[in-house]
Length: 265
Image 1 (spheres, rainbow, N blue to C red):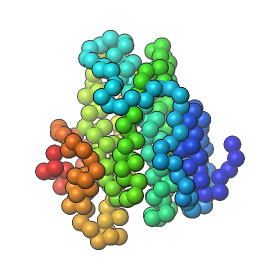
Image 2 (image 1 turned 90 degrees about the vertical axis):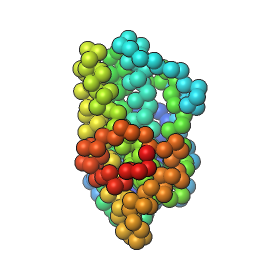
Image 3 (image 1 turned 135 degrees about the vertical axis):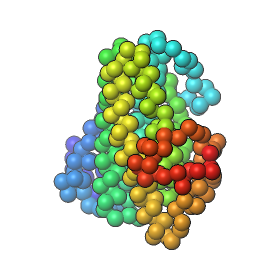
Image 4 (image 1 turned 120 degrees about the vertical axis):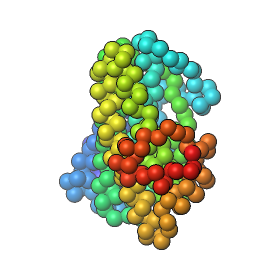
């Protein structure tokens, strides 16, 4: 793999890579190159509206997705892990699109944080795909949700909106629901998956904290009040509203205090 000349070019190459294994490799390589000082803090203009996607999984709109149901069967557990693996796969692109699209608006530390996020999302995907293979399945065997990139498309024009919706709403929602999911896998006699999800949960607290940090940085630069501006952006760009219960302790650890989401649910 050749070295890249800039953070923007390296991030764009990740976005243009469809094959999951190759995307993971490029995400890791780009992050190493950035950390070693081999990429300039420079960016490109021609970014894809939608990242490259593999032939499988088949991508369906939310209303077309088959219901997983509840219970302890292996088939249901595989379906849930597959859905989570797809979320992590899309999250790789969300991190690198953040770098390529908005890095020029922020100091270098912004790229430090989002290269780290991108590499960790790649690691999360690998852990979940490996778990699927251990259970006799693989990423791509089942259909997946095609609506996950909608938030990126809707906020491509505004870094504050992207930060408000992707890490501070969508990833924060993962903090709310993952502890119960971890416990469910433990009760179903699957401690290996529970351990993977707990690792992801701890990393996602940090990812949400990066979103909150840079959202507040942008608000300070634009002289806007963070809580009010965030609520306005959520009302504009997030359909359906926020739904409790909220994991207040994890959100607080990420800097997403109740002043943000109190009264907006």
